[in-house]
Image (cartoon, rainbow, N blue to C red; front, side, top):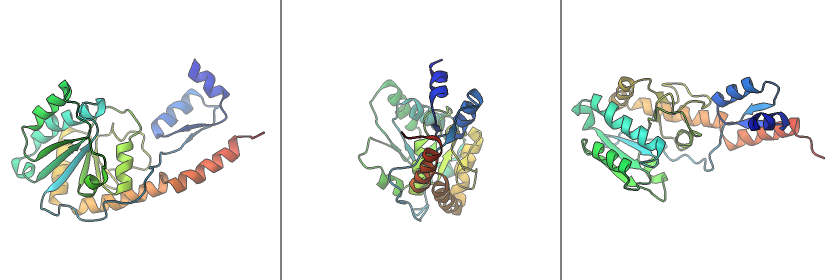
Length: 240
């Protein structure tokens, strides 16, 4: 009831995902609701070139280890995805996990799962994420729940690091297309197959990096959003 009262009394409503835009327009069809994809505060490209430079793929996972999304994502990777990879591929993987580690029960569970595989580093919280993006080839975002603002994927688009995601983790983001500007895996098998594909053909990553950045500049950039916000304010907000 409170949401409905606010919607009816608001001149302009801004949403940040396609999914919630459709939902709210269905709930309040007479309201002015506009999609406004979120921008990133630092738009400098970090990963410009060079994939699998050491004959191994450098995977990265970002987020609190025992947080709801981070825990679910890592559990999925270690229990569902990695077991499908033959040793010939697992031996070509370096996997860095960056995010706060509270040594909780869930963190301990993830560490136990990680011990089954070589070349997995749980690095904990870092003050500067950029060097890790720069040295990474593929960002794994594997939660099976659609929550939050998808900021990890947007950050990767900006910095030039390709993303392999579940559909849920990318839900609502604008302009994404599988195998064009992102890799989206519908199942455990597709997720593991995507990892094998980029190891066999790193050129895929270069194309996704370029297209991902172009997608950000087209839909999400500060320049695009500032212009769109100005137009919306001039059209729907009346100053006195």
